Length: 163
Ligand code: GDP
Ligand code: MG
Image 1 (cartoon, helix red, strand yellow):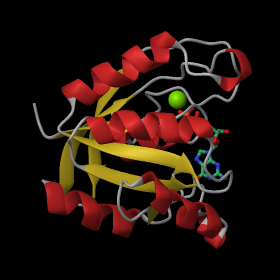
Image 2 (cartoon, rainbow, N blue to C red):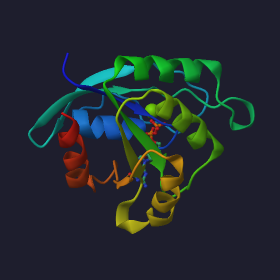
Image 3 (cartoon, rainbow, N blue to C red):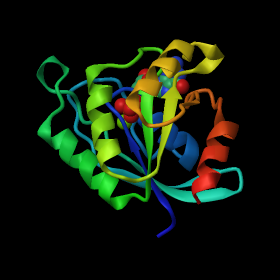
Image 4 (cartoon, helix red, strand yellow):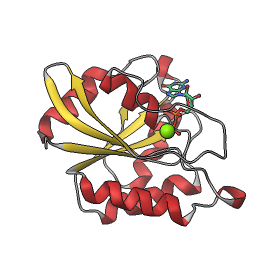
């Protein structure tokens, strides 16, 4: 198998949108409707001349009061184990939430390379959230818009360093 990234982060930050953009097919479900459990998905990503495997950790929904369910944690841990490196995604418009910090703990404990992605940053709207994300201790954020395809050059540079 080629070098594999797991896309990690709390629900609704844009993981599946990023997956679909990089795989170039609508293999992952993009949905903001709560209450649906979906499977882990894998695909071959293309980013310029780079090729790698990505795993979308599926749309498991938050439990009561936005808590992380055991199932969500399990799925994230399995994806992290399978991966060589992680894309850790936040919603830069929303800013950091307690669940971002909880997922970041998993990511740090994995001891694998992490690329921190401040998504939904189109039109520079994510600048404040991106600044906040330094507090996660996962390195410098790469500002992207998975939906609009912005920041893909910076993402390319970050990925190329790891391959
Ligand atoms: P996931 O739960 O992390 O997989 O998130 P999804 O990919 O399902 O996206 C959740 C919501 O965020 C959807 O309504 C997407 O259209 C939206 N979204 C994803 N990426 C972006 C982005 O770059 N900018 C904006 N404004 N919205 C986005
Ligand atoms: Mg999803």
